[in-house]
Length: 108
Image (cartoon, rainbow, N blue to C red; front, side):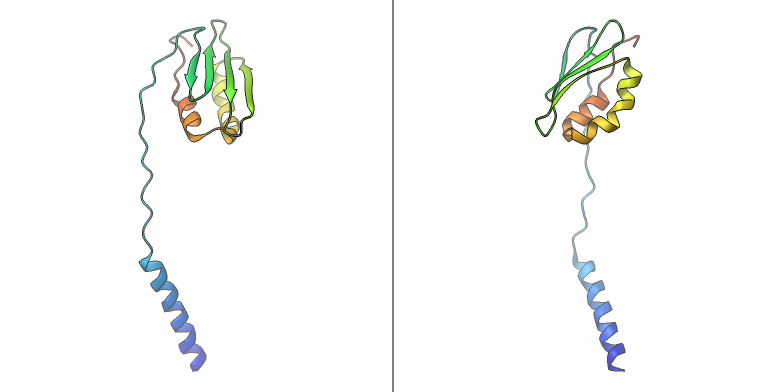
């Protein structure tokens, strides 16, 4: 009988602790409109320079959140978009959001 009373007390104590914890606030995101870059004109995205080339290639240069160099060229916008999940592993949140929000020039 004493073990059951102790078990109930432990369970009630656990529920009591969780009930008094503050609820996490929902994440707020603010989207800013990103102007479409011009062809062959470098666009800075929080320390990463993105260039949509006239031949369809997308060039990235800059530094990731760990200070590592980013210097790569993608064959086209589709390859660039598909590479973002892997690339984002080393980017800051601002860089990641900026690259995702970046729209290629019209006709790309």
